[in-house]
Amino acid sequence: MAEPRAEHTATLLADGKVLVVGGGGPAATSAEQYDPGSGSWSATGQLIEAAYSPTATLLRDGRVLVVSGTSAQLYDPTSGSWSATGSMHDGRGGFTATLLADGHVLAAGGYGGSSTLTSAELYDASRGSWTRTGAMIEARQFHTATLLANGKVLVTGGVNIGGDWPVSAELYDPATGSWSATGAMAEPRADHTATLLTDGKVLIVGGGGAGEGSVLSSAELYDPVSGSWTTTGIMIEGRAHHTATLLLNGAVLVAGGSDGGGPNLASAELYDPGTGSWTSTAAMHEIRFGHTATLLLDGRVLIAGGCCDSSTGNQLAAAELYDPGTAT
Image 1 (cartoon, rainbow, N blue to C red):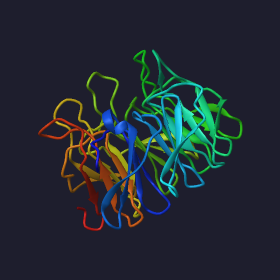
Image 2: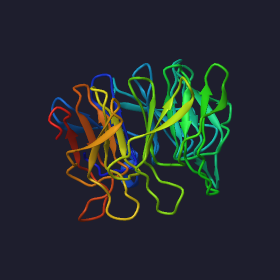
Image 3: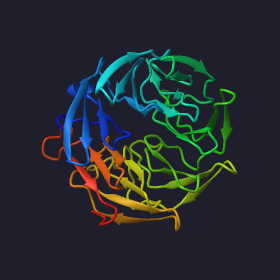
Protein backbone atom coordinates (compact mmCIF):
# COMPACT_ATOMS: atom_id res chain seq x y z
CA MET A 1 0.00 0.00 0.00
CA ALA A 2 1.05 3.61 -0.48
CA GLU A 3 -0.03 4.59 3.05
CA PRO A 4 0.54 2.77 6.33
CA ARG A 5 -2.86 2.32 7.97
CA ALA A 6 -4.77 0.45 10.66
CA GLU A 7 -8.46 0.34 11.65
CA HIS A 8 -9.26 1.02 7.99
CA THR A 9 -11.75 -0.71 5.69
CA ALA A 10 -11.33 -3.01 2.69
CA THR A 11 -14.18 -3.63 0.24
CA LEU A 12 -14.27 -6.08 -2.66
CA LEU A 13 -15.67 -4.26 -5.69
CA ALA A 14 -17.68 -5.80 -8.52
CA ASP A 15 -14.65 -5.81 -10.83
CA GLY A 16 -12.59 -7.82 -8.32
CA LYS A 17 -10.44 -4.93 -7.15
CA VAL A 18 -10.24 -4.03 -3.44
CA LEU A 19 -10.96 -0.52 -2.17
CA VAL A 20 -9.03 0.39 1.00
CA VAL A 21 -10.15 3.51 2.86
CA GLY A 22 -9.16 5.60 5.86
CA GLY A 23 -7.72 4.50 9.17
CA GLY A 24 -5.71 6.64 11.54
CA GLY A 25 -3.28 9.51 11.02
CA PRO A 26 -2.55 10.78 7.49
CA ALA A 27 -4.21 7.70 5.97
CA ALA A 28 -7.62 8.91 7.19
CA THR A 29 -8.03 11.17 4.16
CA SER A 30 -6.82 8.73 1.50
CA ALA A 31 -8.09 5.76 -0.46
CA GLU A 32 -6.39 3.25 -2.72
CA GLN A 33 -7.22 0.21 -4.81
CA TYR A 34 -5.56 -3.18 -5.05
CA ASP A 35 -5.64 -4.91 -8.44
CA PRO A 36 -5.26 -8.70 -8.02
CA GLY A 37 -4.47 -9.04 -11.73
CA SER A 38 -1.31 -6.94 -11.54
CA GLY A 39 -0.68 -7.21 -7.80
CA SER A 40 -0.36 -3.43 -7.64
CA TRP A 41 -1.86 -0.54 -5.67
CA SER A 42 -3.04 2.82 -6.97
CA ALA A 43 -4.51 5.91 -5.32
CA THR A 44 -8.16 6.59 -6.08
CA GLY A 45 -9.70 9.97 -5.37
CA GLN A 46 -9.41 12.07 -2.24
CA LEU A 47 -11.95 11.67 0.54
CA ILE A 48 -14.12 14.69 1.24
CA GLU A 49 -13.71 14.21 5.00
CA ALA A 50 -11.22 12.21 7.03
CA ALA A 51 -12.46 8.70 7.82
CA TYR A 52 -11.12 7.57 11.19
CA SER A 53 -11.94 3.91 11.95
CA PRO A 54 -14.77 4.06 9.43
CA THR A 55 -17.27 1.52 8.15
CA ALA A 56 -17.57 0.76 4.45
CA THR A 57 -20.62 -0.86 2.84
CA LEU A 58 -20.91 -2.00 -0.77
CA LEU A 59 -24.29 -0.81 -2.04
CA ARG A 60 -26.45 -2.60 -4.60
CA ASP A 61 -25.52 -0.11 -7.34
CA GLY A 62 -21.79 -0.78 -6.86
CA ARG A 63 -20.98 2.40 -4.95
CA VAL A 64 -19.38 2.23 -1.50
CA LEU A 65 -20.82 4.06 1.50
CA VAL A 66 -18.11 5.15 3.96
CA VAL A 67 -19.20 6.47 7.36
CA SER A 68 -17.16 7.97 10.20
CA GLY A 69 -18.51 10.09 13.03
CA THR A 70 -21.61 11.74 11.57
CA SER A 71 -20.22 12.18 8.08
CA ALA A 72 -20.99 9.87 5.20
CA GLN A 73 -19.54 9.84 1.70
CA LEU A 74 -19.87 7.72 -1.42
CA TYR A 75 -17.21 6.25 -3.68
CA ASP A 76 -18.11 5.65 -7.31
CA PRO A 77 -15.86 2.95 -8.84
CA THR A 78 -16.78 3.97 -12.39
CA SER A 79 -15.29 7.45 -11.98
CA GLY A 80 -12.95 6.85 -9.04
CA SER A 81 -14.47 9.88 -7.34
CA TRP A 82 -16.04 10.73 -3.97
CA SER A 83 -19.21 12.65 -3.18
CA ALA A 84 -20.88 13.74 0.03
CA THR A 85 -24.17 12.22 1.11
CA GLY A 86 -26.52 12.71 4.05
CA SER A 87 -25.05 12.82 7.55
CA MET A 88 -26.18 10.47 10.31
CA HIS A 89 -28.36 11.82 13.10
CA ASP A 90 -25.92 10.58 15.77
CA GLY A 91 -22.15 10.83 15.61
CA ARG A 92 -20.79 7.38 16.37
CA GLY A 93 -17.62 5.32 16.43
CA GLY A 94 -17.17 1.63 17.16
CA PHE A 95 -20.53 0.94 15.48
CA THR A 96 -21.67 -1.53 12.83
CA ALA A 97 -23.05 -0.94 9.34
CA THR A 98 -25.01 -3.72 7.64
CA LEU A 99 -26.48 -3.88 4.15
CA LEU A 100 -30.05 -5.15 4.43
CA ALA A 101 -31.85 -7.29 1.87
CA ASP A 102 -33.89 -4.28 0.70
CA GLY A 103 -30.77 -2.20 0.01
CA HIS A 104 -30.90 0.02 3.10
CA VAL A 105 -27.88 0.22 5.41
CA LEU A 106 -28.43 -0.28 9.14
CA ALA A 107 -26.03 1.64 11.42
CA ALA A 108 -26.30 0.50 15.04
CA GLY A 109 -24.79 1.38 18.40
CA GLY A 110 -21.26 2.64 18.95
CA TYR A 111 -20.03 5.45 21.13
CA GLY A 112 -20.97 9.09 20.85
CA GLY A 113 -19.42 11.70 23.11
CA SER A 114 -19.33 10.32 26.64
CA SER A 115 -21.92 7.60 26.20
CA THR A 116 -22.52 4.30 24.46
CA LEU A 117 -25.50 4.33 22.11
CA THR A 118 -28.59 2.19 21.72
CA SER A 119 -29.74 4.19 18.72
CA ALA A 120 -29.90 2.88 15.18
CA GLU A 121 -30.63 4.48 11.82
CA LEU A 122 -31.15 3.51 8.19
CA TYR A 123 -29.47 4.91 5.08
CA ASP A 124 -31.56 5.08 1.92
CA ALA A 125 -29.19 5.07 -1.06
CA SER A 126 -31.91 6.27 -3.46
CA ARG A 127 -32.45 9.42 -1.41
CA GLY A 128 -29.02 9.83 0.14
CA SER A 129 -30.54 10.32 3.59
CA TRP A 130 -30.82 8.67 7.02
CA THR A 131 -33.91 7.96 9.12
CA ARG A 132 -34.07 6.73 12.68
CA THR A 133 -35.27 3.21 13.37
CA GLY A 134 -35.91 1.26 16.58
CA ALA A 135 -33.28 1.47 19.31
CA MET A 136 -31.38 -1.60 20.46
CA ILE A 137 -32.22 -3.19 23.80
CA GLU A 138 -28.62 -2.81 25.06
CA ALA A 139 -26.13 0.00 24.56
CA ARG A 140 -23.02 -1.46 22.95
CA GLN A 141 -19.86 -0.60 21.03
CA PHE A 142 -17.24 -2.84 19.37
CA HIS A 143 -19.97 -5.43 18.81
CA THR A 144 -20.74 -7.41 15.65
CA ALA A 145 -23.71 -7.36 13.28
CA THR A 146 -24.49 -10.18 10.84
CA LEU A 147 -27.17 -10.33 8.16
CA LEU A 148 -28.93 -13.70 8.46
CA ALA A 149 -30.50 -15.71 5.65
CA ASN A 150 -33.98 -14.72 6.90
CA GLY A 151 -33.18 -11.01 6.45
CA LYS A 152 -32.85 -10.20 10.15
CA VAL A 153 -29.63 -8.83 11.67
CA LEU A 154 -27.93 -10.56 14.60
CA VAL A 155 -26.03 -8.22 16.96
CA THR A 156 -23.72 -9.77 19.54
CA GLY A 157 -21.58 -8.71 22.47
CA GLY A 158 -19.69 -5.47 22.76
CA VAL A 159 -19.01 -3.27 25.75
CA ASN A 160 -20.24 0.10 26.97
CA ILE A 161 -18.51 3.09 28.47
CA GLY A 162 -19.97 2.24 31.88
CA GLY A 163 -17.88 -0.94 31.88
CA ASP A 164 -20.74 -3.37 31.31
CA TRP A 165 -20.12 -6.30 28.95
CA PRO A 166 -23.43 -7.47 27.48
CA VAL A 167 -23.49 -11.23 27.07
CA SER A 168 -26.78 -10.71 25.31
CA ALA A 169 -27.58 -10.90 21.62
CA GLU A 170 -30.49 -9.30 19.79
CA LEU A 171 -32.18 -9.35 16.41
CA TYR A 172 -33.25 -6.45 14.20
CA ASP A 173 -36.29 -7.08 12.04
CA PRO A 174 -36.38 -4.77 9.00
CA ALA A 175 -40.06 -5.52 8.48
CA THR A 176 -41.01 -3.90 11.80
CA GLY A 177 -37.96 -1.72 12.50
CA SER A 178 -37.75 -3.27 15.96
CA TRP A 179 -35.31 -5.30 18.06
CA SER A 180 -35.96 -8.47 20.05
CA ALA A 181 -33.80 -10.48 22.43
CA THR A 182 -32.45 -13.84 21.35
CA GLY A 183 -30.31 -16.42 23.15
CA ALA A 184 -27.37 -15.08 25.16
CA MET A 185 -23.79 -16.07 24.42
CA ALA A 186 -21.84 -18.23 26.84
CA GLU A 187 -19.24 -15.48 27.40
CA PRO A 188 -19.22 -11.69 27.16
CA ARG A 189 -16.87 -10.43 24.45
CA ALA A 190 -15.97 -7.35 22.38
CA ASP A 191 -13.67 -6.80 19.39
CA HIS A 192 -14.52 -10.35 18.34
CA THR A 193 -15.54 -11.59 14.89
CA ALA A 194 -18.81 -12.98 13.52
CA THR A 195 -18.87 -15.11 10.36
CA LEU A 196 -21.96 -16.37 8.57
CA LEU A 197 -21.27 -20.01 7.66
CA THR A 198 -22.60 -21.81 4.62
CA ASP A 199 -25.20 -23.66 6.74
CA GLY A 200 -26.67 -20.36 7.98
CA LYS A 201 -25.18 -20.52 11.47
CA VAL A 202 -22.99 -17.71 12.81
CA LEU A 203 -19.51 -18.40 14.18
CA ILE A 204 -18.38 -16.03 16.96
CA VAL A 205 -14.64 -16.12 17.66
CA GLY A 206 -12.32 -14.68 20.30
CA GLY A 207 -12.36 -11.06 21.37
CA GLY A 208 -11.60 -9.27 24.59
CA GLY A 209 -13.23 -10.69 27.71
CA ALA A 210 -14.69 -8.92 30.73
CA GLY A 211 -11.56 -9.36 32.87
CA GLU A 212 -8.80 -6.75 32.62
CA GLY A 213 -6.44 -7.74 29.81
CA SER A 214 -8.49 -10.85 29.11
CA VAL A 215 -8.40 -12.24 25.57
CA LEU A 216 -10.58 -15.19 24.63
CA SER A 217 -9.74 -18.33 22.68
CA SER A 218 -13.30 -19.62 22.86
CA ALA A 219 -15.76 -19.79 19.97
CA GLU A 220 -19.50 -20.38 19.80
CA LEU A 221 -22.20 -20.94 17.19
CA TYR A 222 -25.58 -19.24 16.86
CA ASP A 223 -28.42 -21.21 15.28
CA PRO A 224 -31.02 -18.83 13.77
CA VAL A 225 -33.62 -21.60 13.66
CA SER A 226 -33.59 -22.26 17.41
CA GLY A 227 -32.22 -18.88 18.52
CA SER A 228 -29.71 -20.68 20.71
CA TRP A 229 -25.94 -20.93 21.14
CA THR A 230 -23.58 -23.88 21.40
CA THR A 231 -19.88 -23.81 22.16
CA THR A 232 -17.51 -25.15 19.53
CA GLY A 233 -13.78 -25.86 19.35
CA ILE A 234 -11.35 -23.60 21.19
CA MET A 235 -8.79 -21.70 19.13
CA ILE A 236 -5.12 -22.56 19.43
CA GLU A 237 -4.40 -18.96 20.52
CA GLY A 238 -6.58 -16.35 22.20
CA ARG A 239 -6.95 -13.21 20.11
CA ALA A 240 -8.88 -9.96 19.70
CA HIS A 241 -8.81 -7.36 16.89
CA HIS A 242 -8.22 -10.26 14.49
CA THR A 243 -9.89 -11.06 11.17
CA ALA A 244 -12.09 -13.99 10.19
CA THR A 245 -12.70 -14.86 6.54
CA LEU A 246 -15.06 -17.47 5.11
CA LEU A 247 -13.11 -19.31 2.40
CA LEU A 248 -14.63 -20.78 -0.74
CA ASN A 249 -14.34 -24.30 0.73
CA GLY A 250 -16.45 -23.33 3.77
CA ALA A 251 -13.55 -23.15 6.24
CA VAL A 252 -12.87 -19.95 8.21
CA LEU A 253 -9.42 -18.35 8.23
CA VAL A 254 -8.63 -16.44 11.44
CA ALA A 255 -5.49 -14.32 11.29
CA GLY A 256 -3.43 -12.08 13.54
CA GLY A 257 -4.81 -10.00 16.36
CA SER A 258 -3.77 -8.97 19.83
CA ASP A 259 -3.17 -11.48 22.59
CA GLY A 260 -3.84 -8.96 25.33
CA GLY A 261 -0.46 -8.66 26.96
CA GLY A 262 2.50 -10.09 25.14
CA PRO A 263 3.55 -9.57 21.53
CA ASN A 264 0.81 -9.25 18.95
CA LEU A 265 0.22 -12.16 16.59
CA ALA A 266 1.33 -13.21 13.13
CA SER A 267 -0.21 -16.65 13.52
CA ALA A 268 -3.25 -17.92 11.64
CA GLU A 269 -5.57 -20.89 12.05
CA LEU A 270 -8.45 -22.56 10.23
CA TYR A 271 -11.87 -23.55 11.58
CA ASP A 272 -13.53 -26.60 10.07
CA PRO A 273 -17.33 -26.35 10.46
CA GLY A 274 -17.67 -30.05 9.77
CA THR A 275 -15.61 -31.08 12.80
CA GLY A 276 -15.81 -27.92 14.92
CA SER A 277 -12.02 -27.98 15.27
CA TRP A 278 -9.08 -25.66 14.63
CA THR A 279 -5.76 -26.34 12.90
CA SER A 280 -2.73 -24.12 12.45
CA THR A 281 -1.92 -22.77 9.02
CA ALA A 282 0.94 -20.66 7.69
CA ALA A 283 1.71 -17.57 9.74
CA MET A 284 1.63 -14.11 8.21
CA HIS A 285 4.92 -12.42 7.37
CA GLU A 286 4.04 -9.54 9.73
CA ILE A 287 2.43 -9.35 13.15
CA ARG A 288 -0.84 -7.46 12.77
CA PHE A 289 -3.97 -6.32 14.55
CA GLY A 290 -6.52 -3.83 13.29
CA HIS A 291 -5.78 -5.08 9.76
CA THR A 292 -8.22 -6.16 7.05
CA ALA A 293 -8.75 -9.50 5.31
CA THR A 294 -10.61 -9.65 1.99
CA LEU A 295 -11.63 -12.76 0.06
CA LEU A 296 -10.70 -12.23 -3.58
CA LEU A 297 -12.65 -13.66 -6.50
CA ASP A 298 -9.98 -16.31 -7.07
CA GLY A 299 -10.25 -17.59 -3.48
CA ARG A 300 -7.09 -16.01 -2.13
CA VAL A 301 -7.23 -13.66 0.87
CA LEU A 302 -5.67 -10.20 0.84
CA ILE A 303 -4.30 -9.13 4.24
CA ALA A 304 -3.57 -5.41 4.40
CA GLY A 305 -2.17 -2.91 6.90
CA GLY A 306 -2.63 -3.08 10.64
CA CYS A 307 -0.40 -2.42 13.59
CA CYS A 308 2.44 -2.67 14.27
CA ASP A 309 5.79 -2.91 12.55
CA SER A 310 8.02 -5.07 14.76
CA SER A 311 11.01 -2.73 14.39
CA THR A 312 9.38 0.72 14.49
CA GLY A 313 6.02 0.18 16.20
CA ASN A 314 4.35 2.08 13.36
CA GLN A 315 1.29 1.15 11.34
CA LEU A 316 1.97 -1.11 8.37
CA ALA A 317 1.80 -0.35 4.67
CA ALA A 318 2.65 -3.97 3.87
CA ALA A 319 0.11 -6.37 2.35
CA GLU A 320 0.26 -10.11 1.77
CA LEU A 321 -1.80 -12.88 0.18
CA TYR A 322 -2.95 -16.17 1.69
CA ASP A 323 -3.54 -19.01 -0.76
CA PRO A 324 -5.84 -21.74 0.66
CA GLY A 325 -4.66 -24.14 -2.03
CA THR A 326 -1.10 -24.14 -0.74
CA ALA A 327 -1.83 -22.86 2.81
CA THR A 328 0.80 -20.13 2.33
